[in-house]
Amino acid sequence: MAQPEPGEYAPYASGYIALASEYNDIRKLLTELKDITYSTFTAIPEEKGNYTYADGKWTIKQKLAHMIDAERVFAYRAYCIALGDKTAFPGFEQDDYVANANSRTLKNIADEFRAVREANLYFINNLSDEQSTIVGTSSNHSTSVRAILYIMAGHELHHLKLLKERYL
Image (cartoon, rainbow, N blue to C red; front, side, top):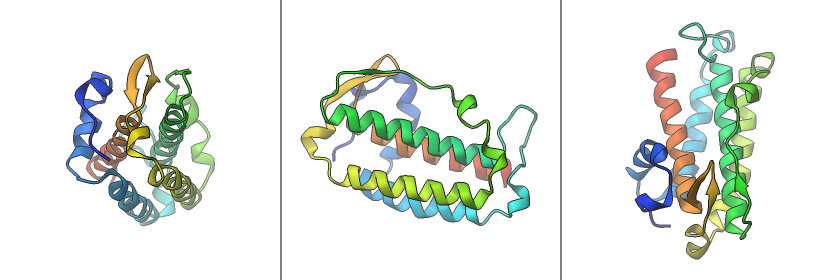
């Protein structure tokens, strides 16, 4: 699957696209990130799961839950657009989505991440090149399926970087 062209996504997504574009194969990257992200979060002691580096910032549990939420949203958008759905997909309120994450164990959230990614990889690995170039509307911007997948990977890379810089 080729990398997305600049007109295939909103300008605000360019940072995520750039992070993922450092790799040649988005499918391989998402497959490898599944294990990297899982092992990174499961290596964190459970008692550190509610740690946050500053007031008003997410805990480690909330960060991982956000990564899952975003993955689900991105994958749903990509799935629908790839199948020709013309629905304009709205944004989502990320803080509302992570509100209950701290009541769970970090291991439980990490297991969910791995399961969600594994399910999404079945879809992603079976996309045709033609389907990857289909464009739909996501958060009020024209976005191709392949751009969404690059955003998904770049978003994950971004949060892994922040985790290492600010939490660990």
